[in-house]
Structure formats: C-alpha cells, structure tokens
Length: 308
Image 1: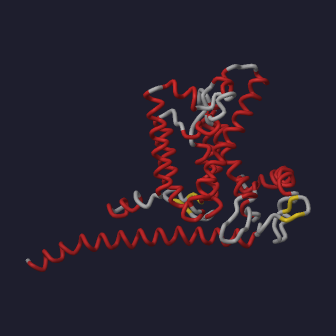
Image 2: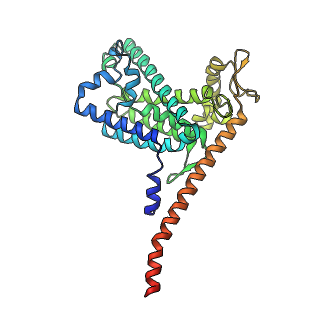
Image 3: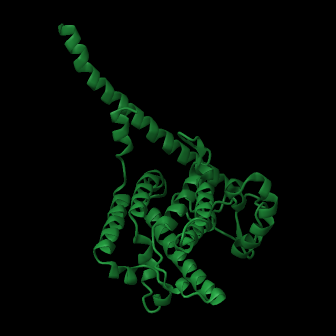
C-alpha cells in the first residue's frame, strides 16, 4: 500500500465522529486519573436510582485502553461511511437512541439476574463502553452495503454483526466477567436492527424502516437456521407493526390497520444502491488522489533523468 493511499485512509473523517472520539478519549483519561468518577458515570445497577444519568453517560466511558482504541477507530471508520448517507442529525440520533436503550436493557437484565441468582456482583459491577453503539452501527453497514467485501478476509458486510457477536460469545467462555460486555453487544445489535428495520425515517422520501427480506432478523443467522428463526421473529414483528415478516406486499408495514408512512421495500433497495455507490465513489476518489500524488512524486525523477 502506497503512502498516499495510507494517508487517504486516515483522512476524511467527519467532524461529528472526531468530536465523539475526543469524548471517548477524554472519558477514558478522566477515569484513569480519578477512578471514583466511574461510580457516577458508569452503569452500576444498584446506583442507577437516583443516578439515572448513567443510562446515557455509561456508553461514552471506556475503562480499558483496548476498549477506547477499538471504539475510537471503529467510530471514525464506520462513521466515515454511514454519516454522509444518513446525515449528521440522523447519525447522532441513532447513536443516542441505541446507547440509551442498550443501557436500559442492560440495567433490566442485571436486576433480573440478581433476583434469579441472588449474586450481588450483578448489582455493583460497573458497566460501560461504546461497544453497544458500535455493534448497532455495524448493523447499519449491513443494511447499506450488505454484499460489499472487506479485504483481506473477503468477509461480506452483511455478516459483520453476526461474526462480532459469535466471537464475543466464544470469548465469554474464557473471560472472567462476560456480563460486563456481552449484554451490551447483544442489545446494541438488536436495538440497532429494530430502529433501522421499523423506525428510521428518510428525510428525502419520508419512508420509514426497511421491510426488505434482505434485512430480516433471520439474515443474521446461517441459511439453514432461518426456517426456525423466522416463526419466532414473526411474533416480535407482529408486536411492532401488526404484520408478520415475509408478508410484505410493497405497501409497507402496518400498526393495527394503519400503514406506517412510506415503509417501502423498493426504497430499501434504492438505499442500499446509494450506499454502494457512495462507497464506490469514495474508493474511486481515493484511488485518483493516490494516483495523482504518485505522479507528482514521479515527475522530479523524470526531470532529473532528462537532465542527465
């Protein structure tokens, strides 16, 4: 990889993502300097009442170095792809919703585990990190460019959330505190999918959600498991929109007997096409810039050889 190409990969990050990255870095530094801050900003289920603000702040506090590095790098590169397509306002809205609802679900899970096991560590374990939002953003990548392959492993984008969760589950068997991160990843992925599937509204069209079969819940699983997953997923689908998955007729989802505004599988296809085009255009631009930089460096060499 040329130096110009490497430079292009490290540029073009959005201002919003760079600002959020700064928040993550400074949050981590603050916790290292004063660990007592963690008891006020992290999600500690026993202290969430009355410290309810930790349902929001916990997502922006990374306790480990590898956590802040992976979160910052993931945010910058995924945001570089998604924010220009969604828009800054929608991108920030998605982060806020996924972060908050993930914290709520983790809080409820921790309380439930305590009452089931009567182990107090579920109440006092500080839970925090941006990984829930990152897992939700990976679902956005799956939606926009599902068939895009990422080198060097040639993994298609549609499998990134599933592979991430599978690795997290495997690692949890060897980790000392899997409850500190596994629920965050699982809920972040699911809530990100719920929002994009049913509630995200496109400003340019007014369409709501993505009812396409290519974005159904069963697509997170291998094909041989889908006949088992689809009937279970249809139960939650009817709860959310009164219409089972697989019965889309092009008119969109319904709540009761009223259709959700603009929920159209055709628009979902167009959205994926726009995402693929945006990625191709960005890659083409980076190649052109890289080629231009290379030609400039070659010119002095040609001039020197001509003079000789």
